[in-house]
Length: 610
Image (cartoon, rainbow, N blue to C red):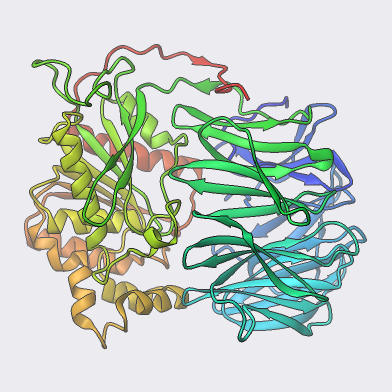
């Protein structure tokens, strides 16, 4: 196999700490995600795993052993490892309980730490030697994730999120708790763990401190405790990584649908922007000697890995031509401006020029599909999306709206959720629709909604509460009935429901009813495609079926599709099947004009130059 892969990368390869030419990544293997090695010196690959359901979790240690998680249909399994160049596969932690993976770390001397969840609501931390039976050092009630280990293996960091509180616990390799962040009486806010410094002897933990007004870098050491670097603030969400051979930090900031990189010296109190092309960085990692690897994309270009140190990275091969014209606009509302990424189906479309109105009396604007992102703590990015590509190529305009609750616009916008769950977001979608129609950019007689998970929930709620605005809807794995979903979902999501609604369904039934699409099912007028998953524990199938029953009773035209999967992730064939079914539904219910002829060739297109 050469230096290209058949699908787009979503993350950079993991790099061997002692030989940065040796890497491990996940890529496509006949429609499944599998683990591959990449040797940058020879530009050669080797497929490591070959499992019927695919393999997602992988790692590589300092001795160039490749690790992967072999899981069953419910996501439970064990870690295995194998030499980089091939050979016998061996159990990484023989005797460890079967569980869900919650993080893995391997030090240079072969000490292994892993977090596993044998059952829901229970996380265990195991420590041992590679290939030997581990010992359990800590057990917590709730979902935790191993987020770092010192090079010496003497300190570990465990991150937890419970009822909205993001905390970090530091423990010794014997299981002794030495710090809990935030500290009692310390600075308020949430802490996100970004790992220990890879430099021996530092024992310095990097954190992101989320505060009311923004985000700060923070560090913790056994000697100095917690230090928040207030001089280094950011107004929107960030993540951060240590440089491997200095005390500097690479910060990746998500801001208004795009990414920025900053190189920060905590010692010198300096910060500078690292130049990258406009767009989104799906991943970025500092390398020895000041090098940088990052995974760049924008709406018009699929993800491409780039390196500033001359190291050869695997590339996705021939990239598809992305049709259309891609821009953005801000819609003023009483609650603040709403940002939308807009794609129009004609590459020569001039509607976005000048005042943003139609260019002629006979110029009919295109039908539009609003792709509603999930989360809600997420956002649409200026990044390649195969669904956007397919819709634009089919003649539809596509609007991606970063409504209230979205990330990338600061903590105040993310918290501007409102007390009536879901309704503020529907208001934002309606406001953007009115703006686009008023500017002559889309056809007000032909607009549809398409969402997944939380986005699918908003599709159902919008169709029921604003039945005159939308002409079709696609909802993939939605919340459709809050009461049933609350009763049957995970403990973590039940706790989130209580925080959002201010109580349980028994305590505040009217709030759950007002935000439930089931309440408004009989008011839906637009035809609807609903896709459910039989093994979904986040948006359980029972509550979707009750909603479908209500649609049937009210005589609402709808179609349904069922997947034999869980909520998160499915193989390539299933994804293509859902995409095909959804496009077929839209073409039937919301016909688009035949788009102008666009060359259907594929081309090598790495995007803008650095």
